[in-house]
Image 1 (cartoon, helix red, strand yellow):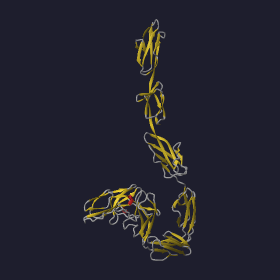
Image 2 (image 1 turned 90 degrees about the vertical axis):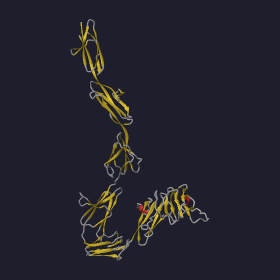
Image 3 (image 1 turned 45 degrees about the vertical axis):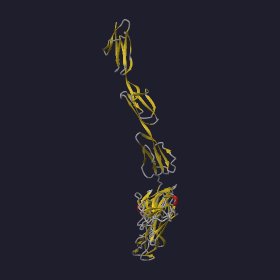
Image 4 (image 1 turned 30 degrees about the vertical axis):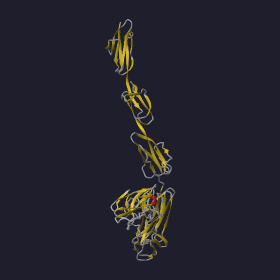
Length: 570
């Protein structure tokens, strides 16, 4: 808060001072008068006398639509006191204390208070129209600057009121003489500078006559001066360092004096003829003119619709153009044959990545600030863990609701700037493994979007059989091709088991009958049985000539293919 605050727009301080009792008081009584600004902003503790040294407590109560800002002392001007409410102090001298109220949503304008600051009454006067005690955001005020004698106006500047006075404000220039009130208190300056007399020196070479009008020892900034130059026959004039000027006649130039000592040089150059040609690339028009007195050539370019002028180039070597200038118009004195190229740049557009992309990032390729129409733009999504690209979109900046979904991840740049975005969708990993590498193969694993239909397939190898799909040891399906809706990450195991053949033969073949031959899973318990024919006696089970059992019923665990022989005799 400022120690002293001068309100530009405050002409009259509005206060309501409570009536002070009229009876006589002892000499040691202290009068504390109170007031409000503006009067309709609120109420304060009444004015009254206090015993010297006693405690005073003043309370400010804002009315609806207002709020309390601070107390200020109005005894010898406006002096800020405190923002405390209530304000408590001891009665030691007569005082006039005013409560400042402010309407909600309204702000004030202040001007520099230091006597040495630009904008004060010595350098010039700043006025604001309309004059009000406070302004609403969006209000527009008109600024008027009146320079003091010997000063010139440079411009208006403004800054946000930080509470520390003008010296603590960061100023920026105001364009024009109107200002829109922001949502803050502000300081506004009219910047003036002192005008000093300066010398203007004219230096000439041989074969040229030049003079200034008026001719005087010093000039003030803004004084109108005319330079007249005449070259001898066979020569032309080269004018160096003339301030911005207007040619008003043959060899006559009018300009305004600058705020500094200045020297103008006029040289005579032997006339030599050079040929200057103009060419262009892109859409636009070009023209050239030459000053008869100085022989300076001025080239001017006007870009066609949608194109932008990008510079003048020395095009004598078309394989290696050299930039002459980006100024337009561009003036120069030819020193040889010259082919000048005006470069008109085709329309440039921007690709703007949306700022609200979630669960990943989006990359644009190629990565540049600007693009030409019909360029191929590629979008590359980088999803966070657990996410995948669902779709890419682009829309014209002029109508962001007109989204186009890409069939892939590329599009041709239209003749306007666009915004691009990507949508990432939650995905879950579906893992598939085989219980045995020898048992078979599995497929269908990968990342799937939520509620996608996923199919996992188990294919047994020769000699194996698919048993089931399990997850965490629990059976989920006995189908070799298992289809399900994805609701989360899964790890399925395809269980395969080896199959073995149990073959039985009889020796002799008419010795009886047998049961139990067939195909079995590895690990199965199998019982084979021999029943001798009439007239035959069972003698045992053999395998590869070795007796494996003497019982007609033989039980064993399958571990591989077996060929068992039932032996009988008569």
